Image 1 (cartoon, rainbow, N blue to C red):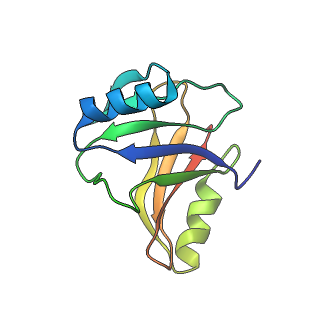
Image 2 (cartoon, one colour):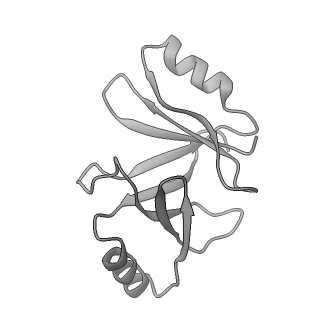
Length: 122
């Protein structure tokens, strides 16, 4: 559904320690991957579940406000990004392809100063 959360990221300074913690707490095995200049450890999930990862990458700093929520935009996010800027927000990360089969993402800054993510299949 449009506007539903579809992905989350949990910043980690100690990537291995964070993976160990989340695997122990949730009794799952995270899938280690690399993307761009960073590392991520993806939680298991399905096509219909909200999913996410522990992330170690420049610019991701653990903090009380460190998690990024991604909102689903359906098939195409461009109209949403256009409305972000038209209404006083800013584009932090433009529409970017994820690894094959994982759709596209973008980050925007809202008028309150929050970082929010968007997700689309195309």
